[in-house]
Length: 532
Image 1 (tube, rainbow, N blue to C red):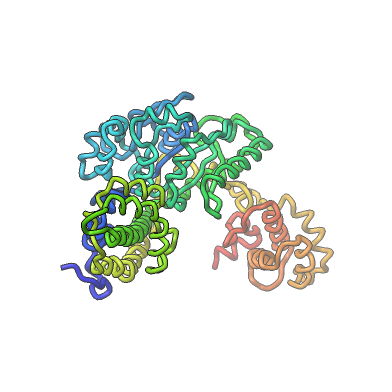
Image 2 (cartoon, one colour; image 1 turned 90 degrees about the vertical axis):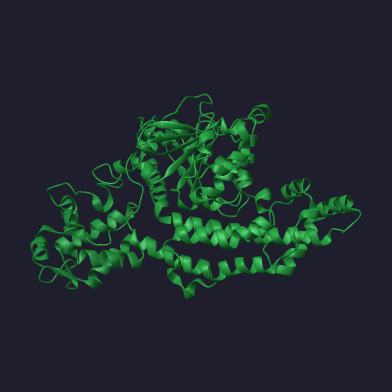
């Protein structure tokens, strides 16, 4: 029998996925089922939803480079892939790991209990004929799955001709994926009506959302600044949140840059995006936990709404007129529930959408409020989730190196083409000569003006020189600690030159190393350090 308080029996769950699955089935699902959550918001979760690998959803207008982006990440073509300037990808393609290359059509995919797509069956044949899974052996796909989507079109005719609710399908995926990447083309920035509708449908998932301004190598720096500003302005109007969405600028394919002016910027942005994607496997359990909490909060609100409507319905006559009245006054019912149960306005579902869905429901079949069902969910949120959070941390600690590997992720990790290699504090890493030596004559001139005693200058004397850089004391203090290699509280000419070299590194915009790299240790100090 399931126990209420997880703290009394922490070994109840073997892992986070098992814990989430059992909590959902025993505590949250009964509340959802009783108050028709699945008819209004989202289908019931299945076992595969708790066990599947992290998923990345790519969304964008046609020809923004979505499929090419996947090809760039994996460094390999995938079955069913089509690339071109016209709207080529006309299907939802789940790119997943498999022992052999192959395609599973949508109708077969939604009956596979091992895949998290069974509930997509509700969108009908028009959608399933445009849905497939491309399986292939690829090291990137061992850690994540990627969902390629049809290019978003402009114009009402194309939107209607899809034959299924495109925005609703994307919303279904958004609830279940770990990262949503919106792609824009820097060369032809335009946000169509359908794209605006899609972005609004992804509301409540802003924490998963990242934006990529792709093909940025096709324009010069001045144009890029204007395009970036226009994109941020447009997104600010559509995504109605005070926080700014993270935008990554670059050219995400393996071809030479057309305008190489911003190469360093593109490299840094790509590295940041790769780090974000690589973190997904490690954070997958936390994401599933967070999504379950969001779902539970919405299920509670749903219970209050449905039970309130049931309470207001007459037992005999005038049901239809009362139903219309209640739907029209749903906003007032929201306010009443908000005050009575101290619920945040942000937890309530969209008013217009809820009114539309209620029109097709039989209010007489709604259930009254059942306190025990709500208490079970409250207990889950108050006690069980806290215990599962501790289990998440344990799993993370047990798998510290869990990250996406292979494909484009390998090329930027090691070797001379790794991000920042040979720059800043890494400059001279491959050289036989001490990199500080080339500027040492200049530094020596300053050193001897400080009146060294026995070949060394004091901290007080060095401070007067170092503060001329205008760097804050916290940075200068770190530079002193790195440069005072023998830790005697004084600097000799080599250590003084090293301090000035580190100041130059910082002034050029690079980060200081946490510990002094071997290639920066003055040759006169290396034997002493090796002996230690």
